[in-house]
Image (cartoon, rainbow, N blue to C red; front, side, top):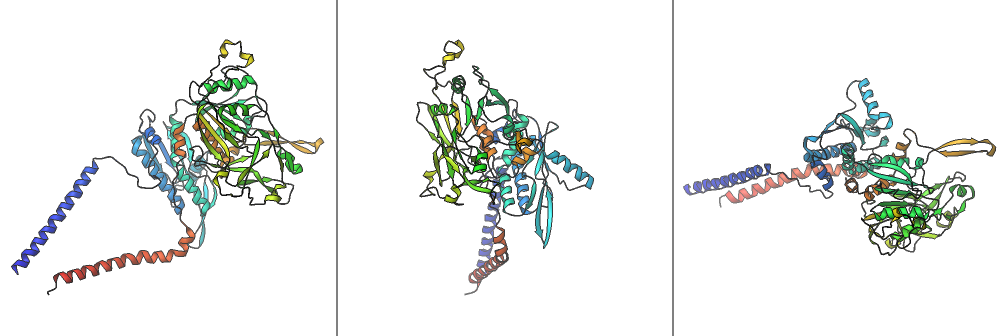
Length: 591
């Protein structure tokens, strides 16, 4: 008996010592960890981590030298989809604070609190005549009744005592709790870091790079590029320039855009563009070498394409990109409005929805609509450059002739779901629609200086790049074009004449709102990449997968999973109790 008591005491002492040691180790580990500063993100898409460029910016006292306040208007009772966005915003700002410290401040505000007068005044202030945060009205069903909740999914940003910008996490409008809202929340979450960093960059930017739209050769006029300009005007100084043979006329610009030229470039102008590239310039050429008249198609059902013969294609060829004089047709297309036929449109395979590639410019953008696009090819040159494809057609596409005839009769031949290739899934069928070459170039005017400059001492030719440069070509020049017209009656001709004008008021905002196309985002990425503003580009290229809830599956299997959640813990406890009982009985029962 005494022996058994001694054994029991010995066991108790042993287990007591083991427990004490375990507790001491846990406490010691916690004390050590409390003096260490580290974070580990185990999520596959690194959703709780910032990009290196953001971290470096936030840590820098010279770049972010003062406090910035984010007022988030996402406080209150919301459906699960909006709560996910709310949590994502809070998590992202906490991550910003971790690196920037008290220079980042934020508060969540409920715009539906206070008296009705105060609420209306605040909401009017947030809306800011359409330039601020736009409200969302979300319709949903709860307990058999239909409800509408108003949400202001955005933030007001204050820096050095002034409101410097508004952030829209989601676009305003009428929504239901459906897949469309899920996708918007997904995209809104993807864009959080970019939107916060864009505001920070705007608030702290001291110097802006210069970007020029080249004119004088029938390029897109200023009214047609207002939408694109608005997207980048906070980040760059934008000017319009006519070269007109002026030596060094482009030298002060960090990048130039040549958009949809229709007239011939003189040798003088091509020489100045060439020498600009030799000095490390960045050239963006958005150009379809063919001219197509949509009015003729609507009136007669067909039209001939014609060559523009601007000469810019020859210059691009010397730099390593050939613009073919064809048109691409694609099974991934947009319709063409035809008011004169019963259904009001035709399936128009020439309106290509171009796909992005793995390049950061296009890896995360929606399809880019290219109405009438020519295919491109890289050609071998003596330049020391690296080529990259940034836009392609789908694998079910093909080149449609050289300077082809376009006819709406094609729809009868190919139908709504056309097949343009023997194997439509073969990735080799993809055609390049946008490309870049970057590195050092040889002058297209090497050994043949323009005669007008032959005796000009200021026109000494640079035969090879002094600095690396970049040349980008897209086989369409209107993908970022916005169109606004005023109509003027012409009674003697029984018709209206349409005059292009600058957009007014909220028209540009309406142009962007809710668009499933990635045209303007692609344009913005192009400019950022070409002018070396890779900080925001690297952020915009990352994706976060939210794994949206499948509501139909929940409705179908909810009872089953409820039973599983209740039954399994209870059964586990009963099983463990049974095992303990059996073990104790076996160990301590008298044999």
